[in-house]
Image 1 (cartoon, rainbow, N blue to C red):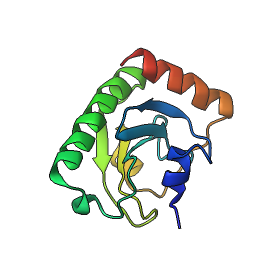
Image 2 (tube, helix red, strand yellow):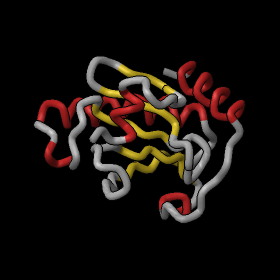
Image 3 (tube, rainbow, N blue to C red):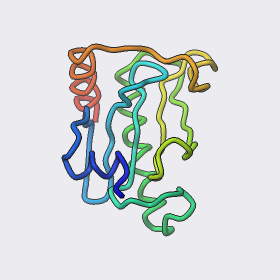
Image 4 (spheres, helix red, strand yellow):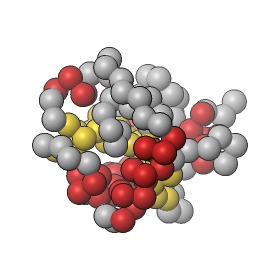
Length: 129
């Protein structure tokens, strides 16, 4: 059975897409820890991040770095935090979270954004890439 992320890659479920290339996709988390919380995933469904072959893994890190740089230019924050948890969705993914305080990395305090706020944020991040 396909993961929710595979369904997003296949266009079966919509997302707030920031960027994609042949191997990777970046989109805003719809249940964010902070404004700009972004997920970077390999398009290939691989359950665990350390099961990714080396070349694809390095590609995911470089893709994530590119997104993080644009994100930091787009959302006021002290830095971009990165986390790989891997328990909630069986598809390897990297969380990029704009941080102003440690609680924003705890995955307990979520924020809400309107559809318009998500769409505006996507455009802003894309303009900084």
